[in-house]
Image 1 (cartoon, rainbow, N blue to C red):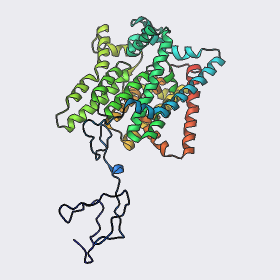
Image 2 (cartoon, rainbow, N blue to C red):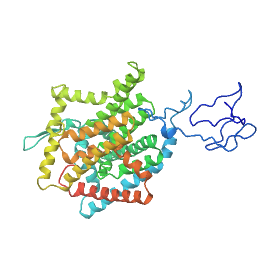
Image 3 (cartoon, helix red, strand yellow):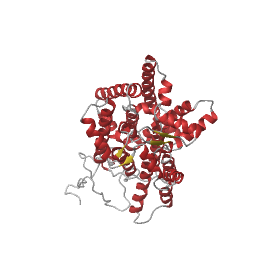
Image 4 (cartoon, rainbow, N blue to C red):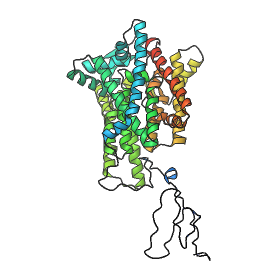
Amino acid sequence: MAKADGTEPATRPGATRRDPAPGRRFPPARGAGARAPTGPGRSSGRSIRRVDPTPCARRCPLSAEILDRPVPSAGVRSVPHRRASLHRAAPALGLFAAARLTGTLVLAGWAWHIGRSPRALLAKSWDSAWYAQIAAHGYGRTLHRPDGVIQSDLAFFPLYPGLVRAVTSVLPVSFGTAGLLVSWLSAGAAAWGIYLVGERLYGRPTGVVLVLLWGLLPHSIVLTMAYTEPLMTALAAWALYALLTRRPLWAAALAALAGLSRPSGIAVAAAVLAAAAYELWRGRGRMDRRMWAAAALAPVGWLSYLLWVGARRGDLLGGYFAVQDGWTSRFDFGVGALRFVRDMLGGRTQFGFAMALLITAAGVMLFALLALVDRPPLPVLVYTGVLVLITVCGSGFFESKPRFLLPAFPLLLPLAHALTKARPGAAIVVITALAGLSFSYGVYALTMAYMAL
């Protein structure tokens, strides 16, 4: 209704403006804060402000897309080409490579100082020797300890030693060198995938900082060793990115491979199954055939190896868990870990055990922040939660718990997001402190500590 002076009333924020005359169109706004056209019958002193809906928009629980944005039409690529994503990830990959190269050089310098071989430390320490043995001769090695413990190489999953053997069949290198090549390439692929996940959730700066933090963890020396964590993290990061970009079959295939890399690879399958369950619930019992196929494929790798070990041991369902029991590794809801912590706090202990306790406690707190404050998409939350649950509630080598958390890179999202908003000086101090801790702890873990990594 027009006022007595012939002017129209101002439109309330968020209200729909009605056309007073059929066929009449309002001119498009000229940007945020643009003034309405003036003239006869118009108010000359008022402005119409356009509010960006993005900060208050709802995100999809699976893909993190803004639900209020229009869906791209058919034939329009919603996911950038791999070459473009690699170009965007280049700063993150450069910082990650610099961090890990510096840590490796620090380790090499100290190793030469004490008369030890840096290559041997990286390629033959602890589990690395078991993987090289499997790659060279296959499964079948069993150790009988003086205390009656029987340790079998069936506890180690087959994907990593299989890749090591494939490299030695193509290149004239030893199994130790091949293991390092697989780990280093996997670490680079993991850093690329981690960047894409961080960029998808919080933007490019967070993605860069997330990769740098992952490369500067206190136990990140494992990323340059002949271990399986880089391979699993690469498969997990790309599987999560495939889920976030609505490619469930790719995610399921990567989850099946992750299930062949490590026992904790089941966390990737859990993320795919959670996405499928959400789609089933949202569709009220109906689900896309691709999601049904993804849900069926995701746990195949993990289940197939467990059943193969069970058949080989004569106990189809319990054979693999009996093998793990020989390594004192079992899921006891944290009873064994609490008992170890009680004994550790009651007497003298190694620095590595204390660091393992601090890092594990920090992981639990970061997961609480991730779940309660950041609230990431469901697949990311489930994947991270399963890894934290396996680490905290599993017994066995307590000093290895920080290594088990290495693939749980989403735990670093709250810290990475906070550092992008902090003052540059404060961020530099935090990064520098983490770098110093990472490089020094890597030297300690491989050359001074009398415990498995």
